[in-house]
Structures are given as C-alpha cells and as structure tokens.
Length: 134
Picture 1 (cartoon, one colour):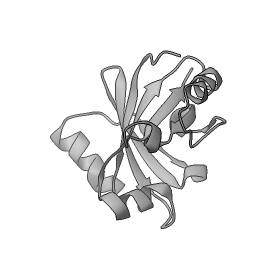
Picture 2 (cartoon, helix red, strand yellow):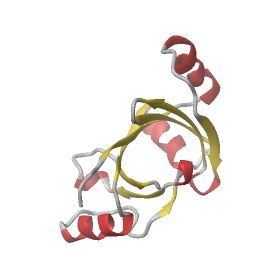
Picture 3 (cartoon, one colour):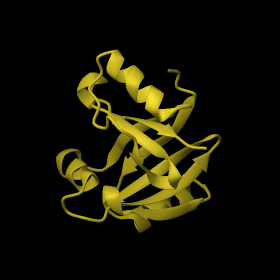
Picture 4 (cartoon, helix red, strand yellow):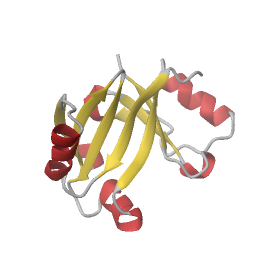
C-alpha cells in the first residue's frame, strides 16, 4: 500500500455555519459543497486547497463521533485522511502489519468516498482515515 496524497484534513466544529464564515471570509477559500452523512451523524463542508481539502465536520447528533470528540477534546483537527488506490487492499495491508482498524470493511464517507479508519492506538494517537475516491 502507498498513500498517494493527503486527501483531506477533518476539523471538528460546533457550529458549521460560523466555521464556514472563517474559511470563506477570512481565508478566502471557496466552499466546494456540503452534505449530511447520516451513517456518520455528521454535516460536512468542503474547502479545496490545492489538491487537498479542509473538511469541516459538525455533529448532527449528541451521540455522534464528532460530538464525542468535541466533548473530550474541544474543537479542532479530528483526523487526517490519506488517499489510497484500493481501499480493500489498504485495509488488508494495515491488518497484515498488525494495525488495529476501526473499520475492517470500507464504509461510505463524505464526497462519495469509500473510507476506513485506523485506530489511533496503532497510529501514535492520530486518527488516520484511508480514503478511496474515483
């Protein structure tokens, strides 16, 4: 497996609209879109920066992973995602190297990506997402 590039950086926010304002009005970035990912209990906004993106994440539920992250850590960087060519092969590779996976099978992510998360216990306390986008 080879990580092809940083696909995106996920930032947990309490108020998506207020956060969008900072990235648009202060940093001058253009928002590429937003969506709700029901399965992950999150509302997402995308800001391309070069060939990567900043992904703002607001929880849609008090028991969602982003709400839990913010409760424990406050707002801020929640994960870093690496683009991979084949998500299934990437998962198998990680498992073969003894990495603990949150997802041993790909799931649907924002922007139509197939994703899987490496458990932070295996990656120096950093939540790493593997992402396959066509």
